[in-house]
Length: 218
Image (tube, rainbow, N blue to C red; front, side, top):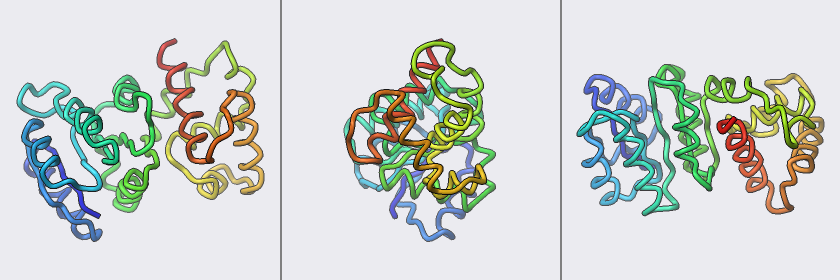
């Protein structure tokens, strides 16, 4: 898997390169500047771009903006954002109308190398990988109106796990229930949120996107 990396902290960037390389990924380009990262990513056409939110030249949300523009120009590109901050608003802005191929992790998660690499792999495959803390903050503000009040506590837990990018097997392991039970909950979520029939992965990301939009605007 080929990746480009944007991080302005030199020591952290070198550490990330080492982690990715040791995991068997090819870092085809790296940069400490958002504009340069965009140029290099467009030139090298990797599978995934990994970017910090705050980067030069303005040191504001330049990395996030560069990632969004790259996603607009190259829809097939996976995007994984690393941030020091738990900002659901950043997630919604990044996701837009298409949550597939998107990841948002807090930088502290990088220490869990397996989870970090798994997130990159999911994003590259067109899945989603949202940080558990961000998801917990969103789902902690349970919607009081609309179809979400129809979801049971267990269905909300399953939907939160779906937002993190977990498979049915992963959700079953996390919630200590059978995979068959997970499938029943997922089907109920689709029905209650009025997610139209389509391929399973598309319906999953649409369910997550529906909740993120409703929750962030309350």
